[in-house]
Amino acid sequence: DAELVGRLRAAGAVTLGKTNVPYGCLDMQTFNQVFGTTVNPYDESRTCGGSSGGSCAAVSSGLVPLAVGSDLGGSLRVPASFCGVSAYKPTARRIPPLGHVPRIYCLQNNLTLGAVANSVDMLEKFMIAACQGPGMLGMPGKAFVPLEPPAPGDIRVLFTSSLADAPTEVAVVQAMEAFASKLEASGVEVVHGFPDLDSKALFRAHKLQAELCTAVTSPGPNPLSRPQPDKSPSAAQLASAEEVREEARAKVDAALGTKRFSVWVMPTCGVLPFPHNPNHDAILVDGKEYPYWQPLLGYCFQAAACGNPTATIPIGMVGHLPIGAQIIGRLWEDEELMAVSRVLEGVVAGAVPKPALHAFPLEEDTES
Image (tube, rainbow, N blue to C red):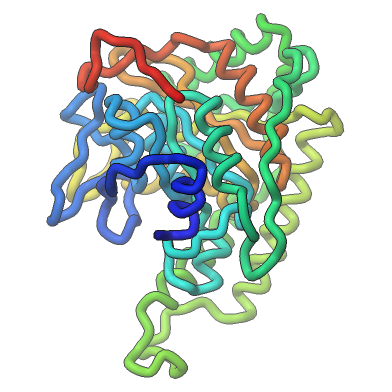
């Protein structure tokens, strides 16, 4: 068993099997030549997202109450939003990824293990089990101890309904603004804005880390010799990238303010679930074409590059399709973020019905 699977088994979990992923786990859709295409339970003509699309579709369709996934640039958050379920990406390095990815430090440093479920309550149970044991690289572990949900008035939300440099459908912005109105009506303090980040520099820094991960997984015949051609980033590039990431972390922390229960909320993706696109053709955003990746990554790289914990919860429907929002917390304050997510989840409770493709369409889901 992978380390995480072993911890879940020790807590009493029953494992059922593996779910589908895209080739190399590097896509915002989930299809491959071995197992085919995973569809969206709300509309089989559309994608479930990726790369943890199989996990999100399995939870959404009622096959399992909990599924494991991983997130490097939105691979938990985007499919959760597309499938109308909740997901959690913990603080980077909080859960050891041994057995999930190769024993390569840069991979373990950047790829974060998390989970998908139908509720924040189940995600908390996951974190309790997943955090039982030592941390990465022999460091002591940090047990997850749930907090009582705060009163709405004790919560401060830095709210971003859209980003100027991220192609975003009008329907996504409208759904986010409706969510903000519900939060304000519930008594939550909502401050509209965005951390003063250099988004282009931060995206390049995150991309360099991804390129390093790709380079080290395909060495030459001698693992200690430099592969030819060597496409990996230089040490100087990586050092500069880390400086950019560290500056961004400080700016996000400053933007969250001094309130204990303070989070940053923004869209999970610039578009709703889109039709299956195996050739990665341009994506239409309100009638305008954009390169495939641009609308899909515009809202996910920030928390990934900085390592901040992030929850995704479903907030409503646009027609027959679900939409989710991501809730970003301070580094290593997973317990505070989860407590806030419980409250925000309650504000939009019942906003997303079961999908048409569901194992128990006429029964209530049960979780234990």
